[in-house]
Amino acid sequence: MMKDAIQSLSEGNKIAFMLIAVVLLNITYPFSETGTFAALLFVGLYLAVTGSAIYLVSSNRRLLIASVFLAVTIAVTGGITITSDFTAALWIQLGWNASLFLQLLLIISLLVIFIIQSETVSREVIFAAIIIYFLLAAIFSLMYVVIESLAPGAFVSSSGAEITWQRMTYFSLVTISTLGYGDIVPVAPAAQSLSALEASVGTLYIAILIGRFVSLYQHETS
Image 1 (cartoon, one colour):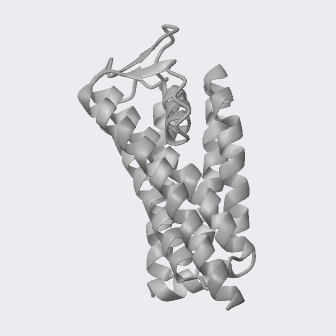
Image 2 (cartoon, one colour; image 1 turned 60 degrees about the vertical axis):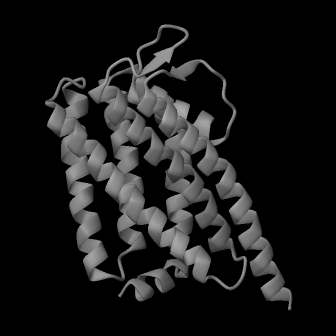
């Protein structure tokens, strides 16, 4: 069944649709800090990513059911968390992060297998590689949010700004690209270890991806 789902990824514009949703999400997430309404609009945009995830696995009944369940969980727990201005019970907030984590993990797993099984460097393969990069940053940001929730003060902002999930998303993107601006600093051991791991993953991902593309290109021209 998984094989059928992987093979169907290149059909239509499944991966292209997800790429558009992911790019828009990464462009607009800072604006979700401007108020509850903006944050809810952002959740709506994230549901577009969720919709693209459902579309991605639509050919596999089991994955489709799992993806729909995660989408509903994300919508409910995310809506409660945001409308309560993040004062909802901790288990609801952690449930939101857990459902987001599982959905991202599912998407990344499918796209990684898709790239590995591809025999040529197609448009879909390139799109899949870009999506994986952004989603890796997203999955690390979720783990940062959990660390900060369980141990407030695990991250410190040099400007004194509050450490929100938007700040964690920004920190994750800066870390995975190894820019290291230093405006947000991980001070707790778990935060430091995870940050170092993400920087390593970001560097290794690029190196491994280039190697895979070269291999596919050589296979295509041979």
